[in-house]
Image 1 (cartoon, rainbow, N blue to C red):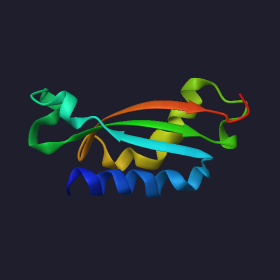
Image 2 (image 1 turned 90 degrees about the vertical axis):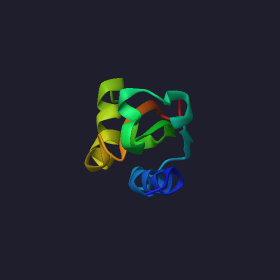
Image 3 (image 1 turned 60 degrees about the vertical axis):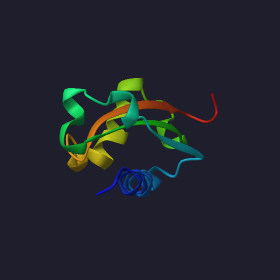
Image 4 (image 1 turned 120 degrees about the vertical axis):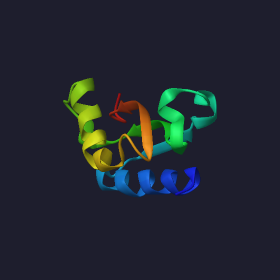
Length: 89
């Protein structure tokens, strides 16, 4: 599965959180040669804002995101950097 398709899968999976803002950035090119990039695994950065994060700690917010994509890790997605916020902040 090409990186662009992986990005689309991430976007689709995260829609269940009803984000008011979602930006997924493919940073795979920054990790070329890294052990986690072997065999074409991807690195992404996710910026997601949703009311579902209201009252949650940063760790709990990240868990909500990881719960939606855990079957994609560590392949085809090797790494996911997450910026998760409640839009009212």
